Amino acid sequence: MIETQTIRLEGDYTGVASTNPGRIRSRNEDSYIVRPDLGLFGVADGMGGHRKGDVASGICVDSIQRWFDGKVEGAVKKKLLNSESVADDTLKAPEQELINSVVFANREIFSLGSSSPAHEGMGTTLVIAMFQGRSVFVVWSGDSRLYRLRKGRLRPVTKDHSLLNEYLKMQMISKSQERDFPMRNIITKALGLQKRADIESMRVRYEHGDVFLFCSDGLNDMLEDKEISDILCGPGSLNQRAERLIEAANSAGGADNITVVLVQRSCLHPDPCSCP
Image (cartoon, rainbow, N blue to C red; front, side):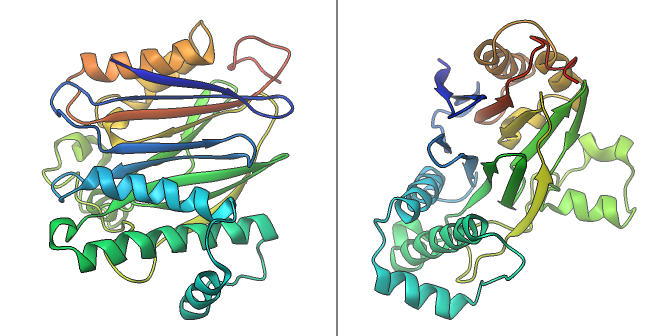
């Protein structure tokens, strides 16, 4: 069963979130965050092979929301930020708060994992973005991805923190060997595995008609980017396209949990591939 949540952002933004355990795994270790009031969207994938991955991803999205909702004590915030030294003068205040919230989420996961034998070694990937007008600020750790569809062209915004991507960058394997790489699911960064958050961030521009896709690797491991693009450019509502992405990933094997979050800025054209 596909769990779907459709949301309407303030102004002319629309979003949808869908998740499914896939065809192999009995438990869904993915979590997502949809906060239209904050312009905040993201996906977290509890790490397969590690104990309590669903707990880690759940703590991640819950901690970020607690930070923004003012439910973290001031003394805790001050101690954390003094110890991590994450201030960046190049960031806008809301962007800095997003970084701070992810640092807090990392510390919460790490604290439980290091104090409870039942949760030792748990971790999660994260890709999260804050939408502000025409600016999108993205923070990520691991191999959960953010794509942007613009004028019919799908392009990844984030770069996977994975052993596969390191091999590709060093030209130790070619793109044609990517699907058969035996260590393709080994990630090089994640939240909760160490005391300091290991993250990357960037700012991109949002143009009229863009569609942004956040996803766990259960989607892009099963589908080529061309297949994802064809579905996003296809007919139907954003909700219907999100469900078709999950159905296609399951039809291709559904080897892992599958979660997608789509966010689109409204335009005059019903087809996201024809917006000016």
